[in-house]
Length: 272
Length: 320
Image (tube, rainbow over all chains, first blue to last red):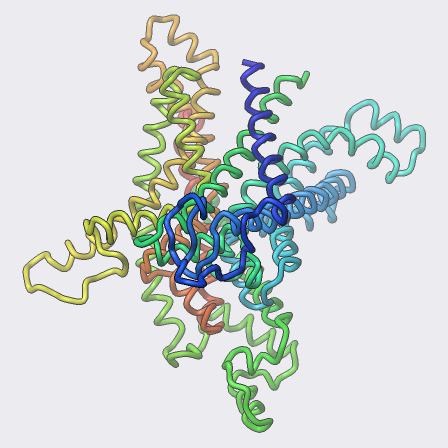
């Protein structure tokens, strides 16, 4: 069982790493310019063939090139968001768990509130009001994505606060900052990694959803969600335009969930 | 029970007000002149001033905030900027449709998901489990808007089994029961897609809960007394696992409401989701904001319902 778990994490990591690598190498390996209209004659909606491996979209652009460039936007957004949300959530969790009292109550109220409203709805409204840009998109996704980590870390910190080594550190007169940084933080990093990995998938979905609805990154930057949207109206004449980006999203999200689940199982197995 | 219900309702109202405050400041933070953003008309200075007056934007921010809170409390959001109809009418038109679609999908999806989970948990780790778990993970990972688009394409356009969208046909035949049948026919495909999405999530939660429950001593004891694997699963593990499945379902309610919104948008089901998207793209914020508030309220109430049901179904609670 252990072996298959490891194999799963490895496969998932390889897939995500591979996609990231393809995104980084996009300028060198993409056969065409992602936003160039290739139609000297009419090259719109060509089926996958030897020249255009994944076909072309209604505007005569190469789907493979757009997919490769799109992975940059999608993965950079997802990775940046997960990291930032994990950091912010950890900070909030430690603050709430370690300080307690009113601070804890206020922070947890905010957490509960944000957890109880549909993220998609909030994101939609915010991006419709505030405009389109990748930076803003990441910021919005962070604002709506840190709560799970914060709750997890808070619970962990409350348990840790009663453990001997923390009491000892307190008894030695160490400053709270030092206790949080040196004695509590290393212990919560494990669960935070798990929740960040699981969060990666939901951020990918959220990003593609917003892009699909036309509230994601501005044109002409391709992103997977936007490509699905562009192919939506041409499904009848060209299934390839939206199918390949949708499969790319599904594969990356599945990989992230598999990796997260396996990491969590492994942590549970290791726990005393 | 009643006390718990009242507390939940109070939480729901609190969430609506918090969401309302959030939306207010979002609108405040929007770049550009609200008078121009809202009406999309760049006019002369006096025209803009008149617009500001109509929208109540000539008052200072705190006064507008108080007014805004009052409109939330009285559920009176004024008129739509686009068709000048009362917002309340438009929302009350859309809300039942959303409830019908989400409610039927939730029931169907929950039943299907539970069935899948039982099939998986019968022999965890074996072929059926691996295959079904893999499939549900894949469905849960695939963007719902793409599944919906594919469903529309396959089953409404390529192979026109179902209508491609909307809630009713434009033609009406005067046959008794035709209206209802037409309605059901329009509901079928979005409901199937949404319940598939919900089933995938429920199956994942319920499988984990069932596998966990089967490791408990009372299931082992039942097996030792000679109960078959199926009986131990259905009569001992399942009742014990429902509690945590429902709790997880309740927690993911906001996510599921988000999914319902997306399904509505693709199928052009004229509910809250479609209303929200339409009003956001037309910058009709007086309509968009109550949609946001009501969808949040739906998520909170759904969560509360799941929790209350979980409490009722907990075998330990029945003992008392």
